[in-house]
Image (tube, rainbow, N blue to C red):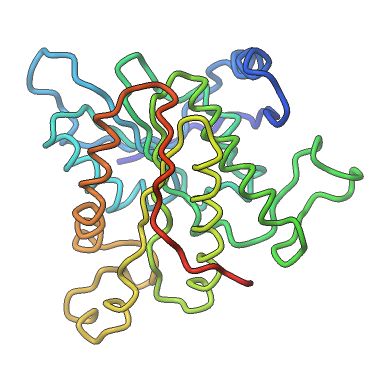
Length: 276
């Protein structure tokens, strides 16, 4: 079971700030409560050895079968893995759940070798602007189709990754959104995937792994016999989550073995440009 105690929103702006200023801002947040955290039986450590830690954060998929499947596989590879998720969260609606301002509350230690981030399916919508980002107080939104939306979203990817880098995380791995059954959402997610790739490349310690690759299978009739997605079309079944992990595991584990701070990777899968 997962329980949640939501802290009051605290806004921290890291754009155009020095590392010292960001550190001070993050330190001022304090631990004002935990985000939604799921407990997995597979996480139980059977030896007294201090294991390397991997934290998975993100939206409802992290709470669900994807997060559970990733934790199970990472534990089998010898990591102490845990997951923290918040339904409907992402980087567009920081008024609902602000991952960036809550970085200081995450359970990061000297044994943390990586944080895996999975967000984006909830993000193809208007971006809620923090007060410091508004041209005027009443201008709270940057709409999806307005010029500059992509720049704002890419900046938030960079901001989240860099905040985690400052916490001492050697590698932040963005897993881009998986393919979904809704054609309109699938088209919008092309832009999200591209911006997550670009933001990871522009960050201090970010990497990206492509989560897409199921589109043809989802559209095939075989999907009805052994579905990769739940009925909503975007959350993964156990089978779909395991296929995703198997598909990305080689690159993912190569990144987990690289514990050098600021070990930036410029390699990312090619994506079809989105013109929406």
